[in-house]
Amino acid sequence: MEGRGRCFTAALKNPLPQSFYLKDDTIAIAKSLLGKVLLVRGEDGIWAGGWITEVEAYNGAQDKACHAYGYKRTQRNQAMFKRGGCAYVYLCYGMYYMLNVVTNEVDEPHAILIRAIEPCWGIEAMMQRRKQKKVSPQLTAGPGRVTQALGITKQHNEAPLWGPDIVISAKGALKVEEVVTTPRIGVHYAKEDALLPYRFYIKNNAFVSKPLYPKY
Image (cartoon, rainbow, N blue to C red; front, side, top):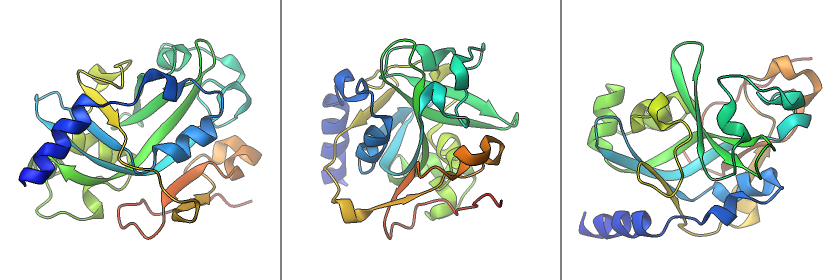
């Protein structure tokens, strides 16, 4: 536990720089996020987090699955038009918050959905928030589960990713063969863009959501 405590402190003190998020290749950034540390101070003030294991990229105005397709601006997606390095949090189906990492420069609405993490810190708080009795993929595998476990709400929308409430920190680079690429999940409305290979996850990691591919 002492070792994990030191890792937690180190992660808080060494967030990724904003420059990490400003490249115009959101696909590359999405892959690079795998294995990074995600820490969140929930609305109850308790920190929790773990290693990012699954993400989905949304490639801006040209991507039919993106909330800002065609540069469409709404009250909900304003965070996507900000400079990369902040959170885009929205409510899905009126039930679940979704955490996205905003990338690219101002007015280029690219984002990456955090779909799953492997829990490491604040596990007791995560289990209480999720009403779980043990650590399993049911805890944090799936974007709605991630936000519920981490205590993320609309108050985290537009929060910077270097603190004080959300921190993404480096853990170490993954090898190419450790990254699995598939189509995204649940974006059938995007038609042909639903088949784009923009979902990435860590191979053989238990904390990954179950794929549900569109049928055509």
